[in-house]
Length: 181
Image 1 (cartoon, helix red, strand yellow):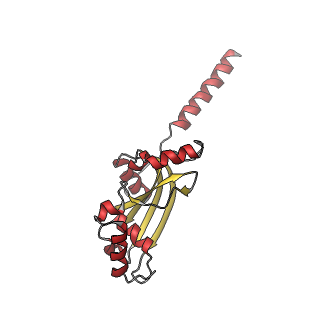
Image 2 (tube, helix red, strand yellow):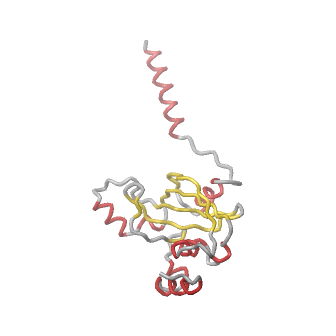
Image 3 (cartoon, helix red, strand yellow):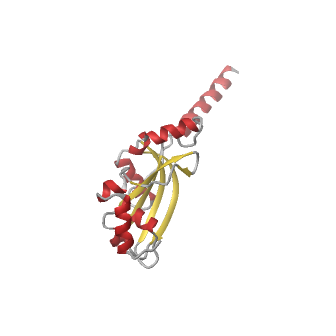
């Protein structure tokens, strides 16, 4: 009887160890594997993969928010017009935005009951099977964004990227694309 209990316990223990140590098998040539490897190379710990979308932007049908995100992805955002951009979305840790003070205050206000504490949503952009950049957001309480600010994939603001204030950048882009709000 002791052998049966010991054998069963051993099998359960081995099963638990196997389940908790399974790592995703990744080939770094195509699909989400490219973006996964890109984030790992940047030193981010991937917590969750939220899927893939594709977008194509045209100068005829583009919003200021679309241009904002394209600017975060690439300093040459006009070169991305009319190209299919694949976006892979992840939740990561070890990101510069993880240490944001606003995030800490919001966590305390929510009573420390948050789904993704100290994690960042990162969206990796791929064109022609190559990562070209991406953007990131501070996330809290499940799927709600904390505020509306987006940053580049490394946590830099539009001001840091362009050298312009947001208002200066907005006016420049609205004139460039003839956007009237």
